[in-house]
Image (cartoon, rainbow over all chains, first blue to last red; front, side, top):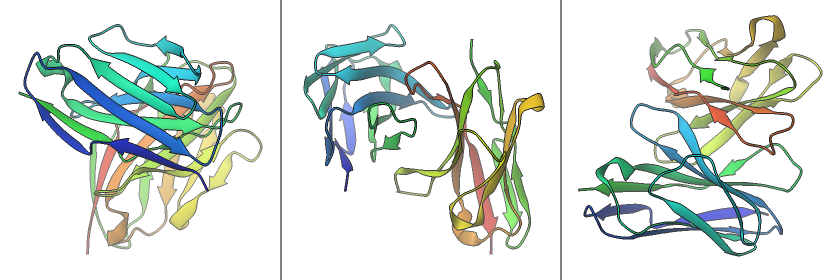
Amino acid sequence: SQTIHQWPATLVQPVGSPLSLECTVEGTSNPNLYWYRQAAGRGLQLLFYSVGIGQISSEVPQNLSASRPQDRQFILSSKKLLLSDSGFYLCAWNPSGRKTQYFGPGTRLLVL
Amino acid sequence: AQSVSQHNHHVILSEAASLELGCNYSYGGTVNLFWYVQYPGQHLQLLLKYFSGDPLVKGIKGFEAEFIKSKFSFNLRKPSVQWSDTAEYFCAVSYGSTLGRLYFGRGTQLTVWP
């Protein structure tokens, strides 16, 4: 069966520090991959999605970037974190061509 | 721009009460509709989904939702809630030609008192 992993689960970082969040999916190949962010009191906002290795689409221009170095690995990065980057980051996947997305456990990021 | 509205941000009910959570979306055309649930400390899980066919769909744990195209709505219902239904509920929509991109509502926190 397919599983999705995210780490770390919780992260506290100072303003201006770099960020790297990782997401991996097991048990499938060529999935579509997504990064969402949920800020306090707000819904989930799509940040990036990828349909294949090296293919990244950005939905919201901001301080973050994403990369997909391997088929089942999706990385969210920042060179310098801002206070406004605090939030709950969720990775999701769906089989290519299918409509239902499945979510990882999330990473709670606090930028101080 | 596409948007999803959940009108209730926090709902508090007693056990055995009936539940209805509202969800409205903008824009017509072919839509795919979802309700996700996040129990405390757990992953976001799929509760139910609608792609086509019978507009009344049944999901897990006794939940159901009705798609009313004329009202752009997809309300979630449960006849009798339990304490274990305490969670945050998210309505989400994707559109036929947008490669699975999901638009989420803000979420509704449901608290059920025993």
